[in-house]
Image 1 (cartoon, helix red, strand yellow):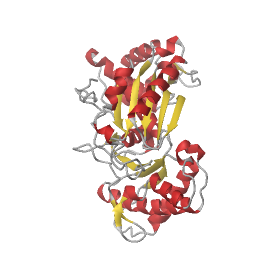
Image 2: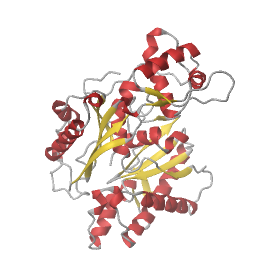
Image 3: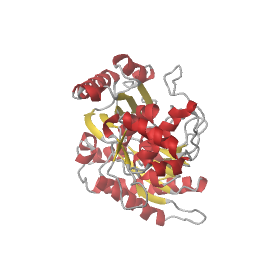
Image 4: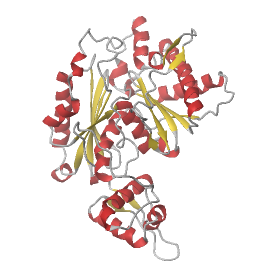
Length: 414
């Protein structure tokens, strides 16, 4: 997969479905990626399973899987005996086969993670700030990556695929809402974040919108694997989201599909407002400040949230009511199987929010609307960083139907 002049991922060759494998030698690289992707999606599958899923001949699958095993990308499990014929050998992704760094930049905090080939975070760094500034973020990103890489042994270090950055585009927007001094974030208008990191690091650098990255992570590693179509909500400093249709991210003609922040909804006073003005963590932050409560625990780490009592409950109820309206609006356009809700908060907050959203939905007029399953996201607060880290892994090794095939530079972020 190539990059265009701006460093963004260019569209690859035409794709085919999992049932469209080819035995032609010239597309062997594609078939290897296809097999790796299917083993990742179906841990423990056998060669016979892969042949059935792809339509490739058993001989071709055997050759490919031997090659992938020889390159230590796949590893075999214990043979399953007791059936007629040869024992079935389950195959698995080798977690140590490849690594990537994921960077999440938010309006209140940043993360750098080291992710293995199976999608597990091995190491991570976290930083909070009043508002993001490149003079502080670039050293945090580059020094953090250098430190993590320095802790790896020589062999594993050679398996680093790259660096993926998940960040809101147009970071200078909504500076007033996050309390940044006037003009302090205008510097982002001149900063090419991808290029700035690339000049400091030896690994290839990828950049995608943070909400789009989070949606891709949910599709690949979370609840999205069970739903071919879903609308996704990620609540960070500002709410963002994504749309998945036929198990692939849909970003639309201009790349803004799924930018659910500007969606008009009614607040509890009956006034029409944008979804981001109700269902964003900065709103909870302001509620806490108004009551003289220190909001800093919101940004230390998701697992460090405490139960803030009344202001948290107010925010949950208001956010749930707004989300319910947004879900109805989305379901009225596309018959989604699910609405997945996640965010930069602990699991217990997510659980309460999803429950409140279902209750709010039941209070609305649902005539003529088929309501999708309303479920919790499974990737969690690190969804944006994991989505970023997935970019170089999929670019080099896998068939990706999520975040690599469309330009999302205008999608809303958090």
